[in-house]
Image (cartoon, rainbow, N blue to C red; front, side, top):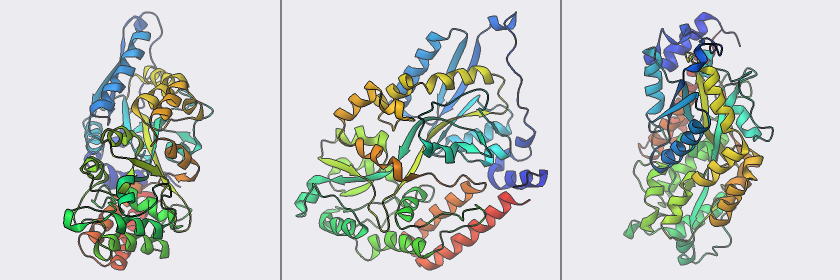
Amino acid sequence: MAKSDGTRSLARRTFLKTAAGTAAGLALGGALPGKAPAQTRKHTVTIWSHFVGNTFQIFQRFVAEFNQANPDIEIKPTSYGPAEILPKYLASVAGGAPPDIYHAPGNIYFDLAANKVIAPWDGLVEVHPTTFKNFDGMTIWEGRRYGVPVNGGLGVMLYNLELLEKGGLDSNKLPETWDDLLEAAKRMTNTAENQWGLMLGNQAGNAAQPYYTFLLTAGGELVTPDGKASAFNSDAGLETLNFFVDLVHKHKVGPHRVYTEVQAWSEWGTRKIGACLLYPVWTNIILGTKIRSMTKVAPRKVKHAAHFAGNYLTLSSASKNKEAAAKFAQWWVQPAISGRWAGESGATPNSQAAADHPNFRQFLEKNPLAQPFLDAIPVARTQPGVLGMPAVSQIISEMVEQAVVGGVPPKEALAKAAARADQELKRAQKA
């Protein structure tokens, strides 16, 4: 696609908002000075991470290990929540003082690359040869890699085996199809006791991920193959949205309120939730509830599928410490490091070599919920890596909330969302 100044200007107005007028002019930064005399100083690399709580504490431990082994470099991480880190990062870009590394949660939006907010890692970092190919769609844009995978993340279904058995179902035969899932949800629901058989996130800003998962299982797509138009206003897209709506309004197996996946996981310990989508780093929380639980790839309408995400180190174009930042990223992708990280954090490894590392194998032996995430990798897909995807994702998320909670008829909500998505894709990609 053409990359005219007009394209970038329009993309900035659509995506960067607070960073309008500044991102395109950011300098790429210079190379580090030679060893004499400037190399005697320590290079400080700032990382803004979306990890919080215990996960961030583990991350800090790994950073301290790197710092100790590399006395000429100091990595300084700062924690922001996944919902707030991108707005804060864009504000820092607008203010001319972004961190050296932006730790992107879930997806890398290539609008950042098109507007030269982030720079490619090519020539600075080489990922491990066994890195899962799933990452390519979300890290490589126009032939250049803009993200170094820290770890993977994908959604599979989580089931309360106790409620399944209480409902008269065999806990060794988890749902294979949408019909199986609906039947299990009905058996696990008791509205009088505020007990719900199935909770799929429906809050605007969050609902795009579960919708995309089930859209894939229905054989649908978010955008056309060329990435220039939406594709979810289809039979599969309508079938998926109707499924979400009917769970609440027709079958009444889910609560009629706004909620996110995080709220469902946080409430798992109440023993009043039968099933939901789960991401790997939350498995330890689920195990901590002492509820007999199990995970499995999402049931099929047409095929089994999963939404593949993860998190990535991206390099700010304005960084003055690119080589030092790259040294940390190269250190991280070693299987001896990333395998240990996956084992300690509970995340999906970033490569097959990391998955084979003894620390992660030990984790699998102790965590029965973890293996299905690895099993789902062959059928997992990232969101399409096209310009305009941030806006499209938000539009889809709003569509789900409007239909499930707001009462907008699914067909109407779908048509309006598709029209808005087409407009945003055209605006972001206009030559």
